[in-house]
Image (tube, rainbow, N blue to C red; front, side, top):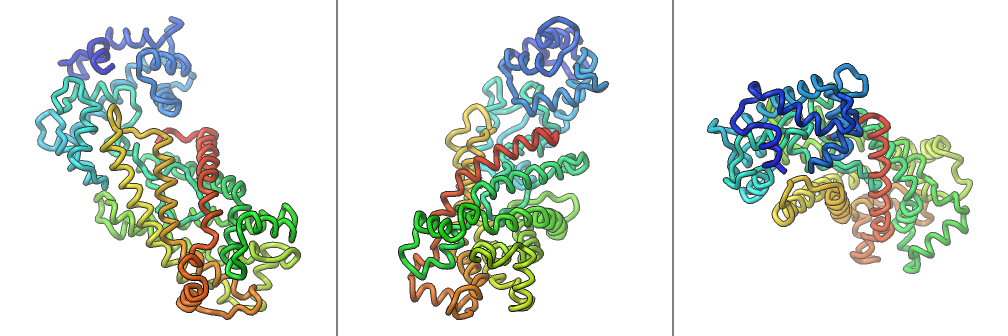
Length: 477
Protein backbone atom coordinates (compact mmCIF):
# COMPACT_ATOMS: atom_id res chain seq x y z
CA UNK A 1 0.00 0.00 0.00
CA UNK A 2 2.85 2.42 0.86
CA UNK A 3 4.58 1.92 -2.50
CA UNK A 4 1.27 2.46 -4.31
CA UNK A 5 0.60 5.59 -2.28
CA UNK A 6 4.04 7.00 -2.99
CA UNK A 7 3.73 6.47 -6.75
CA UNK A 8 0.13 7.53 -6.97
CA UNK A 9 -0.10 10.47 -4.58
CA UNK A 10 3.27 11.88 -3.63
CA UNK A 11 6.43 12.04 -5.74
CA UNK A 12 9.28 10.41 -3.87
CA UNK A 13 11.80 13.22 -4.28
CA UNK A 14 9.50 16.23 -3.90
CA UNK A 15 9.41 18.39 -0.81
CA UNK A 16 6.03 19.08 0.72
CA UNK A 17 5.95 22.71 -0.50
CA UNK A 18 6.56 21.52 -4.09
CA UNK A 19 3.75 18.95 -4.17
CA UNK A 20 1.85 19.37 -7.47
CA UNK A 21 -1.80 20.12 -6.71
CA UNK A 22 -2.85 17.59 -9.37
CA UNK A 23 -1.58 14.79 -7.11
CA UNK A 24 -3.85 15.98 -4.31
CA UNK A 25 -6.67 16.37 -6.82
CA UNK A 26 -6.26 12.78 -8.00
CA UNK A 27 -6.46 11.49 -4.43
CA UNK A 28 -9.39 13.81 -3.67
CA UNK A 29 -11.26 12.47 -6.69
CA UNK A 30 -10.71 8.92 -5.43
CA UNK A 31 -12.35 9.88 -2.13
CA UNK A 32 -15.13 11.95 -3.73
CA UNK A 33 -17.09 8.88 -4.74
CA UNK A 34 -20.21 10.66 -6.03
CA UNK A 35 -18.24 13.38 -7.88
CA UNK A 36 -20.03 16.36 -6.27
CA UNK A 37 -16.79 18.20 -5.43
CA UNK A 38 -16.98 17.59 -1.67
CA UNK A 39 -16.24 14.62 0.61
CA UNK A 40 -18.48 13.74 3.55
CA UNK A 41 -17.53 11.45 6.43
CA UNK A 42 -19.10 8.39 4.79
CA UNK A 43 -17.18 8.96 1.54
CA UNK A 44 -13.94 9.47 3.49
CA UNK A 45 -14.43 6.19 5.36
CA UNK A 46 -15.39 4.22 2.23
CA UNK A 47 -12.65 5.87 0.14
CA UNK A 48 -9.89 5.09 2.65
CA UNK A 49 -11.16 1.53 2.89
CA UNK A 50 -11.04 1.11 -0.89
CA UNK A 51 -7.48 2.49 -0.93
CA UNK A 52 -6.48 -0.17 1.61
CA UNK A 53 -5.96 2.22 4.52
CA UNK A 54 -8.96 1.90 6.87
CA UNK A 55 -8.08 3.75 10.10
CA UNK A 56 -11.13 3.08 12.27
CA UNK A 57 -14.07 5.34 13.01
CA UNK A 58 -12.41 7.51 15.68
CA UNK A 59 -9.35 8.34 13.55
CA UNK A 60 -11.42 9.02 10.44
CA UNK A 61 -13.77 11.30 12.37
CA UNK A 62 -10.76 13.15 13.80
CA UNK A 63 -9.38 13.78 10.30
CA UNK A 64 -12.77 15.02 9.14
CA UNK A 65 -13.33 17.28 12.18
CA UNK A 66 -9.84 18.81 11.89
CA UNK A 67 -10.07 19.37 8.14
CA UNK A 68 -13.62 20.73 8.06
CA UNK A 69 -12.67 24.35 8.77
CA UNK A 70 -16.07 25.93 7.99
CA UNK A 71 -17.93 23.19 9.90
CA UNK A 72 -20.42 22.51 7.10
CA UNK A 73 -20.10 18.74 7.48
CA UNK A 74 -18.15 18.36 4.21
CA UNK A 75 -14.55 18.60 3.02
CA UNK A 76 -13.97 20.61 -0.16
CA UNK A 77 -10.68 20.35 -2.07
CA UNK A 78 -9.10 23.43 -0.42
CA UNK A 79 -9.86 22.09 3.08
CA UNK A 80 -8.58 18.66 2.09
CA UNK A 81 -5.30 20.03 0.70
CA UNK A 82 -4.80 22.36 3.68
CA UNK A 83 -5.30 19.46 6.11
CA UNK A 84 -2.70 17.31 4.34
CA UNK A 85 -0.13 20.13 4.16
CA UNK A 86 -0.62 21.08 7.83
CA UNK A 87 -0.46 17.44 8.85
CA UNK A 88 2.77 16.93 6.89
CA UNK A 89 4.38 19.85 8.75
CA UNK A 90 3.56 18.20 12.07
CA UNK A 91 4.89 14.88 10.83
CA UNK A 92 8.09 16.62 9.68
CA UNK A 93 8.65 17.87 13.25
CA UNK A 94 8.03 14.36 14.60
CA UNK A 95 10.48 12.93 12.04
CA UNK A 96 13.17 15.44 13.02
CA UNK A 97 12.69 14.67 16.72
CA UNK A 98 13.51 11.01 15.98
CA UNK A 99 16.35 11.69 13.53
CA UNK A 100 18.95 12.35 16.25
CA UNK A 101 22.01 12.51 13.95
CA UNK A 102 20.23 14.63 11.31
CA UNK A 103 21.17 12.33 8.42
CA UNK A 104 17.64 12.31 7.01
CA UNK A 105 16.99 8.71 8.06
CA UNK A 106 15.59 7.05 11.19
CA UNK A 107 17.44 3.99 12.47
CA UNK A 108 16.53 1.43 15.15
CA UNK A 109 18.97 2.92 17.69
CA UNK A 110 17.36 6.36 17.28
CA UNK A 111 13.92 4.90 17.96
CA UNK A 112 15.22 3.21 21.14
CA UNK A 113 16.84 6.45 22.30
CA UNK A 114 13.78 8.61 21.58
CA UNK A 115 11.32 6.27 23.27
CA UNK A 116 13.54 6.03 26.35
CA UNK A 117 13.32 9.82 26.67
CA UNK A 118 9.52 9.48 26.51
CA UNK A 119 9.55 6.85 29.26
CA UNK A 120 9.02 3.79 27.04
CA UNK A 121 11.80 1.19 27.11
CA UNK A 122 12.06 -1.18 24.13
CA UNK A 123 14.80 -3.44 22.78
CA UNK A 124 16.71 -2.93 19.52
CA UNK A 125 14.80 -5.92 18.11
CA UNK A 126 11.46 -4.29 18.94
CA UNK A 127 12.64 -1.04 17.36
CA UNK A 128 13.47 -2.96 14.18
CA UNK A 129 9.91 -4.30 14.12
CA UNK A 130 8.61 -0.74 14.30
CA UNK A 131 10.95 0.24 11.45
CA UNK A 132 9.90 -2.74 9.36
CA UNK A 133 6.24 -1.72 9.58
CA UNK A 134 7.10 1.73 8.12
CA UNK A 135 10.04 0.85 5.81
CA UNK A 136 8.82 0.56 2.22
CA UNK A 137 12.11 -0.15 0.40
CA UNK A 138 13.59 -2.79 2.72
CA UNK A 139 16.67 -0.77 3.78
CA UNK A 140 15.81 -1.06 7.53
CA UNK A 141 15.93 2.71 7.75
CA UNK A 142 13.06 5.15 7.26
CA UNK A 143 13.52 8.33 5.24
CA UNK A 144 11.19 11.33 5.23
CA UNK A 145 9.16 10.10 2.25
CA UNK A 146 8.48 6.73 3.85
CA UNK A 147 7.59 8.37 7.15
CA UNK A 148 5.26 10.88 5.47
CA UNK A 149 3.52 8.23 3.39
CA UNK A 150 2.98 5.98 6.40
CA UNK A 151 1.38 8.71 8.52
CA UNK A 152 -0.31 10.58 5.66
CA UNK A 153 -3.80 9.68 6.85
CA UNK A 154 -3.02 8.88 10.47
CA UNK A 155 -4.31 11.80 12.57
CA UNK A 156 -1.49 11.71 15.14
CA UNK A 157 0.25 15.06 15.58
CA UNK A 158 3.52 14.32 17.36
CA UNK A 159 5.87 11.51 18.38
CA UNK A 160 4.20 11.12 21.79
CA UNK A 161 0.90 10.29 20.12
CA UNK A 162 2.61 7.81 17.80
CA UNK A 163 3.74 5.66 20.74
CA UNK A 164 0.40 5.97 22.55
CA UNK A 165 -0.81 2.74 20.91
CA UNK A 166 0.50 1.10 24.08
CA UNK A 167 -0.96 3.54 26.57
CA UNK A 168 -1.85 1.52 29.68
CA UNK A 169 -5.48 2.54 29.94
CA UNK A 170 -8.48 1.20 28.09
CA UNK A 171 -11.33 2.19 30.36
CA UNK A 172 -11.11 -1.07 32.31
CA UNK A 173 -12.64 -1.16 35.81
CA UNK A 174 -12.48 -4.45 37.70
CA UNK A 175 -13.66 -3.01 41.01
CA UNK A 176 -10.30 -2.14 42.57
CA UNK A 177 -8.94 1.38 42.36
CA UNK A 178 -5.23 0.88 42.99
CA UNK A 179 -4.06 1.12 39.39
CA UNK A 180 -1.72 3.90 38.28
CA UNK A 181 -3.66 6.87 36.84
CA UNK A 182 -4.01 7.69 33.18
CA UNK A 183 -1.58 9.80 31.14
CA UNK A 184 -2.87 12.77 29.16
CA UNK A 185 -1.06 14.87 26.58
CA UNK A 186 -0.88 18.66 26.87
CA UNK A 187 -3.26 18.86 23.91
CA UNK A 188 -5.81 16.66 25.69
CA UNK A 189 -5.55 18.83 28.81
CA UNK A 190 -6.01 22.08 26.89
CA UNK A 191 -8.90 20.80 24.78
CA UNK A 192 -10.83 19.35 27.72
CA UNK A 193 -10.52 15.78 26.40
CA UNK A 194 -9.04 14.69 29.75
CA UNK A 195 -12.16 15.32 31.84
CA UNK A 196 -14.35 13.70 29.19
CA UNK A 197 -12.17 10.59 29.30
CA UNK A 198 -12.27 10.56 33.11
CA UNK A 199 -16.06 10.99 33.05
CA UNK A 200 -16.41 8.19 30.50
CA UNK A 201 -14.23 5.97 32.70
CA UNK A 202 -16.27 6.89 35.79
CA UNK A 203 -19.59 5.98 34.16
CA UNK A 204 -18.06 2.74 32.82
CA UNK A 205 -16.82 1.91 36.32
CA UNK A 206 -20.25 2.59 37.85
CA UNK A 207 -22.04 0.31 35.35
CA UNK A 208 -19.36 -2.38 35.63
CA UNK A 209 -19.36 -2.39 39.45
CA UNK A 210 -23.16 -2.47 39.60
CA UNK A 211 -23.25 -5.39 37.16
CA UNK A 212 -20.75 -7.43 39.18
CA UNK A 213 -21.87 -6.26 42.65
CA UNK A 214 -23.30 -9.68 43.72
CA UNK A 215 -19.89 -11.30 43.19
CA UNK A 216 -18.20 -8.44 45.03
CA UNK A 217 -20.51 -8.77 48.04
CA UNK A 218 -19.97 -12.54 48.05
CA UNK A 219 -16.21 -11.93 48.12
CA UNK A 220 -16.56 -9.64 51.15
CA UNK A 221 -18.81 -12.15 52.96
CA UNK A 222 -16.32 -14.95 52.35
CA UNK A 223 -13.44 -12.75 53.52
CA UNK A 224 -15.19 -11.88 56.77
CA UNK A 225 -17.18 -15.04 57.57
CA UNK A 226 -15.37 -17.71 55.55
CA UNK A 227 -13.25 -18.82 58.51
CA UNK A 228 -16.35 -19.75 60.53
CA UNK A 229 -17.13 -22.65 58.27
CA UNK A 230 -15.19 -24.45 55.58
CA UNK A 231 -18.50 -25.04 53.79
CA UNK A 232 -19.00 -21.40 52.70
CA UNK A 233 -18.61 -21.76 48.96
CA UNK A 234 -19.95 -19.71 46.05
CA UNK A 235 -23.31 -21.46 45.79
CA UNK A 236 -23.80 -21.61 49.56
CA UNK A 237 -22.82 -17.96 49.95
CA UNK A 238 -25.31 -16.75 47.34
CA UNK A 239 -28.08 -18.92 48.80
CA UNK A 240 -27.37 -17.60 52.30
CA UNK A 241 -27.46 -13.95 51.16
CA UNK A 242 -30.70 -14.38 49.19
CA UNK A 243 -32.33 -16.26 52.08
CA UNK A 244 -31.35 -13.56 54.57
CA UNK A 245 -32.28 -10.46 52.55
CA UNK A 246 -33.77 -11.38 49.18
CA UNK A 247 -32.40 -10.73 45.70
CA UNK A 248 -31.91 -7.00 46.38
CA UNK A 249 -29.49 -7.77 49.19
CA UNK A 250 -26.96 -8.96 46.60
CA UNK A 251 -26.34 -5.27 45.76
CA UNK A 252 -25.92 -4.19 49.39
CA UNK A 253 -23.00 -1.74 49.67
CA UNK A 254 -22.86 -1.12 45.92
CA UNK A 255 -24.17 2.46 46.23
CA UNK A 256 -21.14 3.47 48.28
CA UNK A 257 -18.82 1.61 45.92
CA UNK A 258 -20.20 3.65 42.98
CA UNK A 259 -20.37 7.01 44.77
CA UNK A 260 -16.70 6.90 45.74
CA UNK A 261 -15.57 6.66 42.08
CA UNK A 262 -15.91 10.41 41.44
CA UNK A 263 -13.95 11.82 44.43
CA UNK A 264 -11.32 9.08 44.20
CA UNK A 265 -10.70 9.66 40.48
CA UNK A 266 -10.53 13.45 40.94
CA UNK A 267 -8.10 13.30 43.88
CA UNK A 268 -5.94 10.64 42.23
CA UNK A 269 -5.68 12.59 38.96
CA UNK A 270 -4.82 15.86 40.75
CA UNK A 271 -2.30 14.18 43.08
CA UNK A 272 -0.67 12.26 40.20
CA UNK A 273 0.00 15.48 38.30
CA UNK A 274 1.48 17.12 41.42
CA UNK A 275 3.75 14.17 42.27
CA UNK A 276 4.99 13.97 38.66
CA UNK A 277 6.02 17.63 38.87
CA UNK A 278 7.86 17.00 42.14
CA UNK A 279 9.74 13.97 40.81
CA UNK A 280 10.77 15.36 37.41
CA UNK A 281 12.51 18.51 36.33
CA UNK A 282 10.68 20.96 34.10
CA UNK A 283 10.54 19.71 30.51
CA UNK A 284 11.71 16.21 31.48
CA UNK A 285 9.61 13.25 30.37
CA UNK A 286 8.12 10.90 32.97
CA UNK A 287 9.81 7.49 32.92
CA UNK A 288 8.37 4.16 34.07
CA UNK A 289 9.92 4.41 37.55
CA UNK A 290 8.70 7.99 38.10
CA UNK A 291 5.28 6.96 36.84
CA UNK A 292 5.16 4.05 39.30
CA UNK A 293 6.19 6.20 42.27
CA UNK A 294 3.87 9.07 41.31
CA UNK A 295 0.99 6.67 40.68
CA UNK A 296 1.49 4.82 43.96
CA UNK A 297 1.65 8.06 45.95
CA UNK A 298 -1.41 9.39 44.13
CA UNK A 299 -3.26 6.17 44.95
CA UNK A 300 -2.27 6.50 48.62
CA UNK A 301 -3.46 10.11 48.68
CA UNK A 302 -6.82 9.23 47.09
CA UNK A 303 -7.30 6.25 49.41
CA UNK A 304 -6.61 8.44 52.45
CA UNK A 305 -9.27 10.87 51.27
CA UNK A 306 -12.04 8.35 50.53
CA UNK A 307 -11.14 5.55 52.99
CA UNK A 308 -14.15 6.15 55.29
CA UNK A 309 -16.33 5.24 52.30
CA UNK A 310 -14.41 1.94 51.97
CA UNK A 311 -15.30 1.14 55.59
CA UNK A 312 -18.94 2.08 54.99
CA UNK A 313 -19.07 -0.16 51.91
CA UNK A 314 -17.76 -3.16 53.89
CA UNK A 315 -20.09 -2.54 56.84
CA UNK A 316 -23.13 -2.26 54.55
CA UNK A 317 -22.13 -5.40 52.61
CA UNK A 318 -21.65 -7.45 55.78
CA UNK A 319 -24.63 -5.95 57.62
CA UNK A 320 -27.91 -7.81 58.11
CA UNK A 321 -31.27 -6.76 56.74
CA UNK A 322 -32.60 -3.76 58.67
CA UNK A 323 -29.30 -3.12 60.49
CA UNK A 324 -28.71 0.08 58.52
CA UNK A 325 -31.26 2.14 56.62
CA UNK A 326 -28.60 3.59 54.33
CA UNK A 327 -25.13 5.13 54.03
CA UNK A 328 -25.77 8.03 56.41
CA UNK A 329 -27.42 5.80 59.03
CA UNK A 330 -24.42 3.46 58.88
CA UNK A 331 -21.97 6.38 59.28
CA UNK A 332 -23.97 7.82 62.18
CA UNK A 333 -24.06 4.50 64.08
CA UNK A 334 -20.34 3.83 63.56
CA UNK A 335 -19.49 7.33 64.82
CA UNK A 336 -21.79 6.98 67.83
CA UNK A 337 -20.66 3.53 68.99
CA UNK A 338 -17.03 3.33 67.83
CA UNK A 339 -15.79 6.87 67.33
CA UNK A 340 -13.97 8.57 64.46
CA UNK A 341 -11.09 6.08 64.48
CA UNK A 342 -13.38 3.30 63.21
CA UNK A 343 -13.53 5.00 59.80
CA UNK A 344 -9.82 4.22 59.33
CA UNK A 345 -9.71 0.61 60.52
CA UNK A 346 -7.62 -1.42 58.08
CA UNK A 347 -6.02 1.72 56.64
CA UNK A 348 -2.43 0.45 57.05
CA UNK A 349 -2.81 -2.87 55.14
CA UNK A 350 -4.82 -1.00 52.51
CA UNK A 351 -1.96 1.48 52.06
CA UNK A 352 0.65 -1.29 51.97
CA UNK A 353 -1.38 -3.12 49.30
CA UNK A 354 -0.95 -0.27 46.83
CA UNK A 355 2.75 -0.96 46.23
CA UNK A 356 2.52 -4.66 45.20
CA UNK A 357 -0.69 -4.02 43.25
CA UNK A 358 0.53 -1.04 41.23
CA UNK A 359 4.07 -2.41 40.85
CA UNK A 360 3.10 -5.88 39.61
CA UNK A 361 0.28 -4.49 37.45
CA UNK A 362 2.73 -2.18 35.67
CA UNK A 363 5.54 -4.78 35.47
CA UNK A 364 3.30 -7.54 34.04
CA UNK A 365 1.80 -5.12 31.52
CA UNK A 366 5.28 -4.10 30.32
CA UNK A 367 6.28 -7.78 30.11
CA UNK A 368 3.19 -8.70 28.08
CA UNK A 369 3.74 -5.68 25.83
CA UNK A 370 7.35 -6.70 25.15
CA UNK A 371 6.30 -10.30 24.47
CA UNK A 372 3.68 -9.19 21.94
CA UNK A 373 6.11 -6.84 20.18
CA UNK A 374 8.77 -9.55 20.03
CA UNK A 375 6.53 -12.35 18.77
CA UNK A 376 3.45 -10.95 17.08
CA UNK A 377 4.17 -7.44 15.77
CA UNK A 378 4.66 -8.13 12.07
CA UNK A 379 2.99 -5.40 10.03
CA UNK A 380 2.12 -2.89 12.75
CA UNK A 381 3.07 -1.95 16.31
CA UNK A 382 -0.60 -1.21 17.05
CA UNK A 383 -1.75 -4.16 19.20
CA UNK A 384 -5.48 -3.65 18.70
CA UNK A 385 -8.30 -3.57 21.20
CA UNK A 386 -8.43 -7.26 22.17
CA UNK A 387 -4.69 -7.46 22.94
CA UNK A 388 -4.85 -4.28 25.04
CA UNK A 389 -7.90 -5.55 26.94
CA UNK A 390 -6.28 -8.93 27.53
CA UNK A 391 -3.00 -7.43 28.73
CA UNK A 392 -4.79 -4.95 30.98
CA UNK A 393 -7.05 -7.58 32.53
CA UNK A 394 -4.21 -10.07 33.08
CA UNK A 395 -1.83 -7.48 34.59
CA UNK A 396 -4.57 -6.18 36.93
CA UNK A 397 -5.42 -9.73 37.98
CA UNK A 398 -1.76 -10.42 38.83
CA UNK A 399 -1.71 -7.19 40.85
CA UNK A 400 -4.80 -8.33 42.76
CA UNK A 401 -3.29 -11.75 43.43
CA UNK A 402 -0.15 -10.19 44.95
CA UNK A 403 -2.01 -7.75 47.19
CA UNK A 404 -4.98 -10.00 48.08
CA UNK A 405 -3.80 -11.10 51.57
CA UNK A 406 -3.48 -7.42 52.55
CA UNK A 407 -6.92 -6.72 51.07
CA UNK A 408 -8.41 -9.60 53.09
CA UNK A 409 -6.84 -8.38 56.34
CA UNK A 410 -8.08 -4.87 55.58
CA UNK A 411 -11.65 -6.12 55.11
CA UNK A 412 -11.53 -8.19 58.30
CA UNK A 413 -10.28 -5.19 60.28
CA UNK A 414 -13.05 -3.02 58.82
CA UNK A 415 -15.72 -5.54 59.86
CA UNK A 416 -14.24 -6.85 63.15
CA UNK A 417 -16.68 -4.89 65.31
CA UNK A 418 -19.65 -6.57 63.57
CA UNK A 419 -18.49 -10.16 64.12
CA UNK A 420 -19.70 -11.54 67.45
CA UNK A 421 -16.94 -12.82 69.69
CA UNK A 422 -14.17 -11.70 67.34
CA UNK A 423 -11.15 -10.11 69.10
CA UNK A 424 -10.20 -6.61 67.93
CA UNK A 425 -6.78 -7.36 66.46
CA UNK A 426 -4.29 -5.17 64.59
CA UNK A 427 -2.82 -6.05 61.21
CA UNK A 428 0.02 -8.26 62.51
CA UNK A 429 -2.27 -9.97 65.01
CA UNK A 430 -4.81 -10.76 62.31
CA UNK A 431 -2.15 -12.19 59.98
CA UNK A 432 -0.92 -14.47 62.76
CA UNK A 433 -4.44 -15.58 63.71
CA UNK A 434 -5.45 -16.36 60.11
CA UNK A 435 -2.26 -18.34 59.37
CA UNK A 436 -2.41 -20.28 62.66
CA UNK A 437 -6.11 -21.20 62.34
CA UNK A 438 -6.63 -21.40 58.57
CA UNK A 439 -3.16 -21.67 57.07
CA UNK A 440 -1.97 -19.80 53.97
CA UNK A 441 -5.21 -20.59 52.05
CA UNK A 442 -7.03 -18.51 54.66
CA UNK A 443 -5.34 -15.39 53.27
CA UNK A 444 -7.01 -16.03 49.90
CA UNK A 445 -10.62 -16.63 50.98
CA UNK A 446 -13.05 -15.08 48.52
CA UNK A 447 -10.53 -14.89 45.70
CA UNK A 448 -12.62 -17.15 43.42
CA UNK A 449 -15.62 -14.76 43.12
CA UNK A 450 -13.08 -11.95 42.86
CA UNK A 451 -11.53 -13.55 39.76
CA UNK A 452 -14.96 -14.54 38.40
CA UNK A 453 -15.93 -10.90 38.10
CA UNK A 454 -12.81 -9.88 36.11
CA UNK A 455 -13.97 -10.95 32.62
CA UNK A 456 -17.52 -9.53 32.82
CA UNK A 457 -16.18 -6.37 34.49
CA UNK A 458 -13.60 -5.86 31.73
CA UNK A 459 -16.11 -6.47 28.95
CA UNK A 460 -18.87 -4.30 30.42
CA UNK A 461 -16.60 -1.40 31.39
CA UNK A 462 -14.92 -1.36 27.98
CA UNK A 463 -18.20 -1.35 26.01
CA UNK A 464 -19.68 1.41 28.21
CA UNK A 465 -16.41 3.38 28.09
CA UNK A 466 -16.28 3.33 24.28
CA UNK A 467 -19.95 4.33 24.00
CA UNK A 468 -19.50 7.13 26.54
CA UNK A 469 -16.47 8.41 24.60
CA UNK A 470 -18.61 8.67 21.48
CA UNK A 471 -21.43 10.38 23.40
CA UNK A 472 -19.04 12.91 24.96
CA UNK A 473 -17.17 13.52 21.70
CA UNK A 474 -13.84 12.09 22.82
CA UNK A 475 -11.48 11.73 19.85
CA UNK A 476 -9.09 8.83 19.39
CA UNK A 477 -6.19 8.80 21.81
